[in-house]
Length: 287
Ligand SMILES: Nc1ncnc2c1ncn2[C@@H]1O[C@H](COP(=O)(O)OP(=O)(O)OP(=O)(O)O)[C@@H](O)[C@H]1O
Ligand SMILES: [Mg+2]
Image (tube, rainbow, N blue to C red; front, side, top):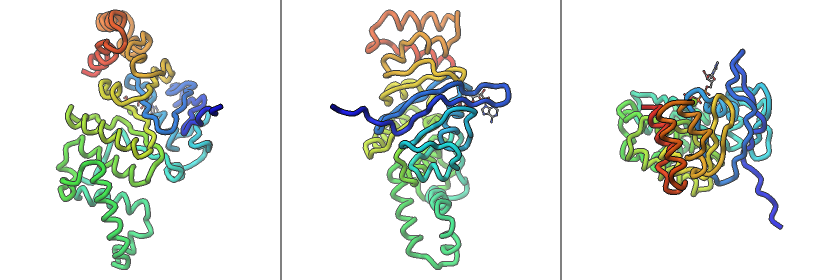
């Protein structure tokens, strides 16, 4: 008999309070190796807070996160990265006056700070050459090779986010957490990014995605977990989530005309062919 697969990430009854505000209440879900899972929910639902707990930037008020069986409680962010769990940030920052390639090099040097002095003193040309090759390879993986020598500040905001993805990939993660990676990207950039996410997964990296772009989330996710006011209100495959009344409710609030229309759309058509009422809801709420 097959034993059940063990999750790569388990979030076990995690709660986070900021003073009197409950940012996350009893969040409980697993991610299996090789999955692409999305964590969605309205603004302020607690998604970034959940990422901050998973990556050691925030201690939960209750509960535990396990990564590959190891409880992460008390570990520093860099220790969690070393276990194979990396993230990108909701707000990406690049050094605008440095080239795209140099931005990646700066990130790679940060990973190995001792080498920087050696390099500055010209002691370590071989390792500098290795780092440059690695940086070019990373830019190739995220599709920025043609922009390598431009100033990072000249890139479109969406492209600047790819620099953050390159830096996260530099840590050779087993799992990657992406916080709103396509915000600021246009439709064609988003399509390219979906291809990139799939390519990363093909290389064996598990992905947890926070994103407001519902068509993108529906297209790329194996499973979706939905947070509202810090509570998990639904989880399942995209076709179940897109017509889940609790999810539509969360995005639109009770009694709105848009909610009524979305509910009608959810009921009228089978899930596979439905016009994605949750997408319509989200587009309305983020318009
Ligand atoms: N450091 C903090 N101190 C106090 N309150 C915080 C802190 N960080 C987040 N919050 C609050 O916790 C709640 C959840 O915020 P969080 O940033 O996790 O939401 P989110 O789901 O990522 O939203 P968005 O989609 O807008 O990025 C919000 O009410 C937010 O104001
Ligand atoms: Mg957020």
